[in-house]
Picture 1 (cartoon, rainbow, N blue to C red):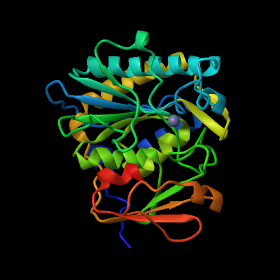
Picture 2: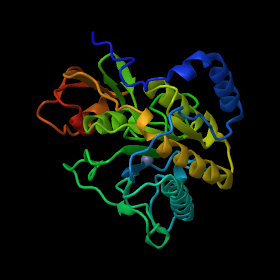
Picture 3: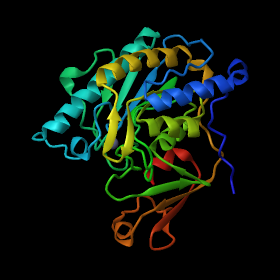
Length: 315
Ligand SMILES: [Zn+2]
């Protein structure tokens, strides 16, 4: 079996390794309090005007903890309309932090539920926003090897995470679980591998405490994380006030972009065997296979071997 456990972990600089126990203690305290996390990569170098790709979701944004805020996306749902504004304010804070660190071109990918969440009036003129979705086209469209870093904003933990607020993997309604090689993966890992295909590192991830933990488990301790809430259950959480989260996002994005050269892209050797598991046969029967390479291996499970992880989002 392929051992891919450590391949994506950002290398810890020597100075941090020697004080690892201090960092671990600080992380524990930060996690307990769910104050915005303040891990800082040690290196402080930056390329000239780095290009940044910000991929967004909605469930991990501060102030959001109920499906009512994220699933019912009609114009008549005031809670969803408020959620969109909360998202825009967080995007804005991250853009400001990137600009303070000297970022050049910034793309924002509006990634939740078909990509119709951005509010045009609230778009920051320093960035370009990618909205909408087309089946058969890549969800992280526009990402190419000309970017220097990816930031994942407002993400949620993978399906089955007990303390993950609004946790799921790809579909919040069908209870899907995804596995690559010998590991279960969520959307953080899937998008980090997609960025890794282009040689681009993920430098920062934001969401609830479970997201910060999942990020560290998958990408290592040096990734900058900002914690927006602590989950007790799927729709039950202790929230960090959005105004505090925004100032943490601004500072964290600035730190991450200033340290951009200390990160390495997440790359796995291929081929990698992927599995998609459903909790019941009806959901599996209803699943429309997206590639002829995908085959059903039992009542609940589909399998596909990925020659190239750029395709991992199609599964
Ligand atoms: Zn979402």
